[in-house]
Length: 218
Image 1 (tube, one colour):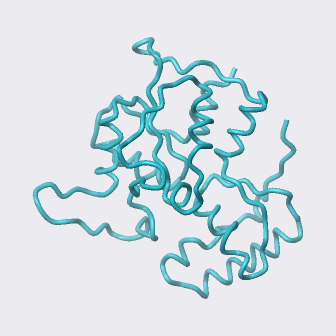
Image 2: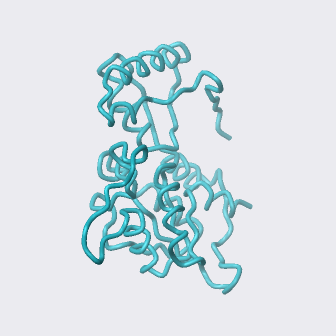
């Protein structure tokens, strides 16, 4: 098993969105408060489900004295499946009886900024699902539309007959792979892609990698 703990009510936002929105003072205040809590606990490793938190805790808190080993939850899942601490059943589609096709949407802060590309695919691979790639993937992935604090403001629409919201553009790229499941590794991406799915093929599901694994655990 894994010996772990959670911060509970002591856990607050890392301040990522405040910094992306340009409020450096608010980010500083949030970072210092979090560093005080984390330093008191002195964790060996911090696991995040959010690539924005991964980036902020692992690469930005250092300027204020917060130095931690931070990993993404898909890295932990990859470790646990490789060590046979998690066993899963094959990814069989209930309706067709065929092996599931899954495409993974690389979050910007996971792939492009932190180079974590293989871990989520290794975690998904233990299900024996067909992993199909979108044309834009890995470090060349396309944003879901939530990055840069865009999640918190009205979308800026493009012009022209083919203009569409960024998340819809990305979801259509995922649909075109023929995948039944779009796997993500970021709560922002999950929200944006799930919203875009309302405008697409009703048979395509959007799930976090952890959900895909959990559904197939024996």
